[in-house]
Image (cartoon, rainbow, N blue to C red; front, side, top):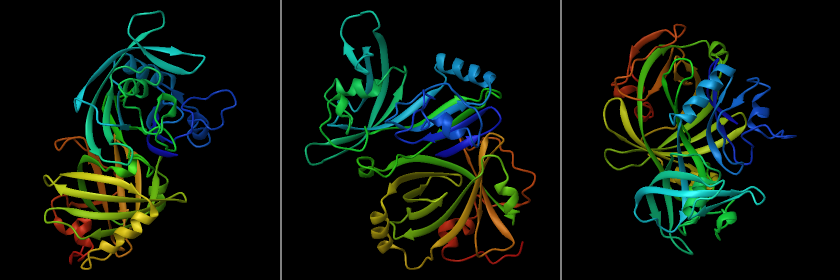
Amino acid sequence: MKILYQDAAIVVVEKPVGVLSEQGEGAGDSVPALLAPTVGEVLPVHRLDRVVGGVMVYARTKQAAAALSRAVTERRLRKEYLAVVEGAPVPAEGELRDLLFKDARQNKSFVVTTPRKGAREAVLSYRVEETLPAEGGALSLLRVWLDTGRSHQIRVQFASRTHPLVGDGKYGSRRKAAAPALFAAGLSFPHPETGREMTFTATPPAVYPFTLFAHTALEIERKFLIRMPDVAALQAQPGCRVRRMVQTYLLALPGETRRVRRVEEEGRVAYIETRKRRVSALTAEETERELTAEAYAALLEEADPTRRAIEKTRYAFPFAGHTVEVDVYPFWQDRAVLEVELQGEDEALELPDFLPIIKEVTSDKRYKNVNLARELPAEEV
C-alpha cells in the first residue's frame, strides 16, 4: 500500500481495492491493520467502500482526528473521484440531488421520491471528461465531487439515471470488471495542526475500464541542482519512498513531450505513459495513464532514436508541507536533482538544510529529463 505523505499528525495513503478502510472484527486486511507495523495506530475520519480504491487521510493523534472530523462536518475535506459509467450523462456537466434511503439488510441504497424515516439528502456535482464508443454501448469517464457522503452515493445516483458504474452489478451494470469503476483520485483538507491546505492525487490502476482513458492535470514544480546527497540519510527520512525508474522518450509532435516509465517500488512494477505540454517555466499540462506490460512494450517501438533511456532512483519524502523528490542518476557522481511540486506558482517553499543547493534550474532547459536524455550539461559544480 502506497503512503503518499506522513508527519506526526496525519498519514495519507492510496487504499487498494479490496481492503477495508476501517478496522473491523477480525479484519486483518484493513488500512489501519496494514499501517500498524510501520506507522502505528491510526484513526479513521472518513471511509471508502471496500471495492473502491484511492486517496485517504488518517489521523495519528486524537487531536488531529478531532480537527479532521470538524473539517468533514464543515465540508472542508473535499473529495474528487473518477468514475466510468455506461452511456453519456446529459448534461455533460451538472449536479445530482436526491433523497437516499439505505436498506441495511441488503447493504444497498435506493433513491426515494418522498421523505421517509432514514432518508437523507445526497448531493454531488460531475463533469464528463471523455466519452468513447465501445462494444455494447458508449462508456464515459466522469470527474465527480461529493457535497455529501452517503453510502454508495455515486454508485446509486448515476445508476438511478441509467448510467451505472461499469462492473457494478449490485446497481445494475451488465459490464464485467474486477470492481466497480470508481476511484478516489483527489483529496484536499486543511492540515489539522497548521491549517495549511493539503492536496493529494493518485492515478487509477491499470485495469479495465480505466485503461481506456487518460487523465490530465497541471503539474507545478520547482527544480534545484544539489550536491550528491547521502543516500542513507535520504532513506532515513520519515515516510521516504524509493522508486527505481527507467524513462524512455517517444517520438512526439512539436510542443509536446511523450515518455513511458517503468517504475519499480518494493517489488511492484508499474508502467506509465505521460504526455506534457509546457504552460510556463514552472507549470506543465500533464496527461498520464497507467499501462499494462504489453502496452508498455508496444510503445517502446515508438522510442525517439536521438535520445537514450534515462535511469534514475527517486527518493521522495514529506518536508514542511510538501513532498521533496531527489533524483539520483548513474551518470553523475557529484550532483543530483531535487524537485518539489507546488499548488501555485507563487507558493512559498522551504527546503531541507541537509541537502546542499547548488542553484535553481527550474528555467534551465539543460536539466530537463528530456534534454538529459540527449546531452549532459558541460559544467563543473
